[in-house]
Length: 453
Image (cartoon, rainbow, N blue to C red):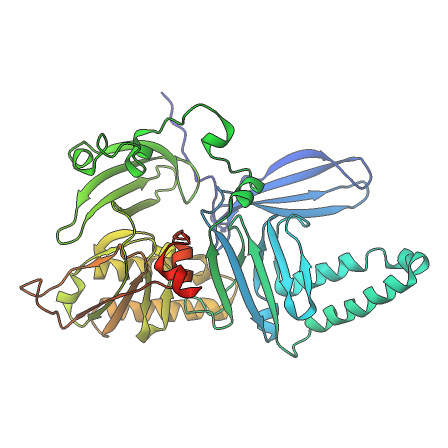
């Protein structure tokens, strides 16, 4: 049998890959109705995800158009971005908009509804420029037929044009129910001082707008769960208990690589962590691109309280602590001014050294280290070098893990687990209403809801 070399479906654009596999399709030009050419390129955007870039050009009339579509599935949660624009650097930030992104500028009471524009890769200034181009498109005819309306539009366009020049701060708000929206952070990997990102759970109507329906909504036939789905959402707890599942062999099911979207296999096993709880360990390996993931999910539900760990890393013994970080747990290194969201590193069962090593590897392999922005590239390289010093034991650091779901765990190095550990501080706290909402605990009977109302 002959074997064909597998390549990632979505690849980085580099000089070592001169043939990025651009797909060309003959298409109808909407301007002159002649035949033009549409080119499709599957690639990856740094700090974002896989995308499909589409470009159309017509040789007959010279018409050109381009748009972008997400190359993977919709995100589990919607996303909101709020950017305070104060300088030219903010105007030059790259922005990825999908078809489902709505744009708001509160200071001007201006809004671009979702699905009114095609997805694109642009900048903050580009969003304003496109809005101006859209408003002035038919102004010549409008001045003749509706002079009063044209005058109002001219006045509003002047206000929009003022936003493109650094002056008074203004706010740009983006909301995307598909979760496929992105705003560049020029301070990466440090926290963005002028941009806030929040996630939210979609409503049923928003899921339907994306074409997402449950099996019961489209069929009267009861849904049949696969073994993997039964493990995560058992219909009969007595017939599918974790005690029985833990005794079974490793389960495997087909999936797609999260990096290049090629077919891959995920192995899953239930195991028990001493002094904590049972967890589900999932491992995926892609033969096409070599990508490996080790993900850990809690075997139980959300705890009553959130938990916050402060781990002091001072010597080699501290690096050996076992750490279970769930996907809802954020990480902070105060000495390095680093904040990492829960989904950035995902859920994993590792050590303190492994957690810091994974952070360094992710930053080192990111395209931004060798990207076109010298300031960002130099900053990332300096940060990775400092993180390497921490891993070599040359600089103490504090790892702060904050998990609102309470499904994270840090091993105590004390001889008696019931005794305090001077290098570990554990704090349990009541969740806020916003944290409950992010976790999907939006029951109106919860104590947090009653307190907030």
